Length: 282
Image (cartoon, rainbow, N blue to C red):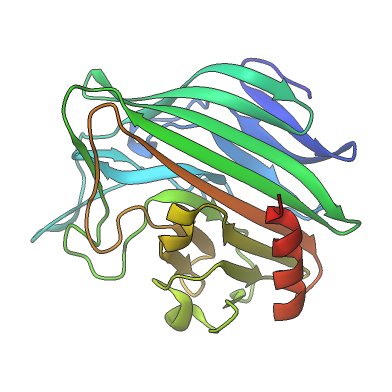
């Protein structure tokens, strides 16, 4: 793995498929945090975007949460009940502490979530890349958030703060924007309106010559609804706080794992399901 203090390169079968930025130089308004960008297919097609004009606080692939006890770890404006999106000086940052493990195909990282002059959460992030076929690989992304304060913390979203349909916050993948909006489907539904906010074992996003298939790979994650955008911009995430705030007691740890299949070409339902089974099998 090529590495320095700022970045490292993930490789699958010797081919670079992603760059991980550990200490990005970003203004506080973007809620600075480590991220993966660019992420590519095995053929080299980029499937992420960084700070696009439509949402400059979207940073490739990572973990972003708009409300941790009132602190914004998502970036941009904060949704305030009865007021709407509002510019607030409430942004937190995820700070890389160290790598506990670092290999060409993955890493284990320690991070500190800081805001308001103190540390709220400590995170252990485990990321692994593996080859599935000659045209597909899997990104296995697990994050564990531990409340290190002496009081309960709660995680919210614009949805829990009064904006219907906006339960974003957690794992988030900002995909590349193309001339046409991507197709999105699950095993049982098709289209943004049908799949957004639903719970499904996997969800596929299909662009021009590439497919991403997201799978909740742990029981809590499979219960998290999917946050999906295709018409406004292409993005997929899992919702930590959908219908209600997520409480994390002092000393408690919340764990989520998402496995994403990154494939060249256009996958149908059977193809997507088969690769997901291969990616998440023990």
